[in-house]
Image (cartoon, rainbow, N blue to C red; front, side):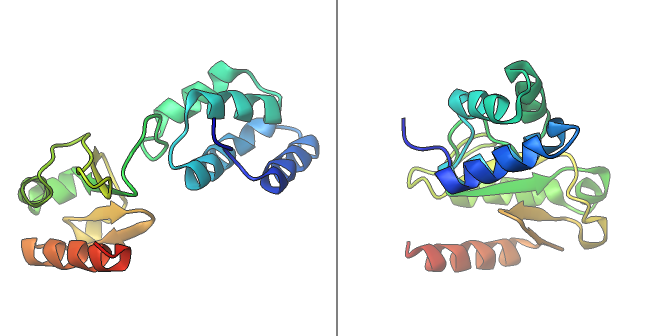
Length: 162
């Protein structure tokens, strides 16, 4: 398997875990580091996290499967989270989600053929004042219209050279 994390970054987590009382505090940070480097968190990432922090693999898996921003299967280079909270839903997130599905040619949980986008629903982005909203990577966008969605996707494709 390909390296899940550079050795110096792994050493950083080992050192930090050895100096704190509750290494469980680092589970999300280590999972996010693996995901950032590898693209997602495979089973070996769960095992590596558990071994590095001195916790049980099941404890890591519980955290990894609870948070919808930790990906336990391969995803596209850019993950689009469409908020479906009550604020977003009441301001048109269903229309935005349908538009995204149409222009990307995929449904929720799927990845575009070129591997660029994965589309996922999410229960809340904390962007109620900008509803309807979506998040791509760590950037939140809103309020959204179909035209704004098209503009955002075009900008990302341009950045990616596609």
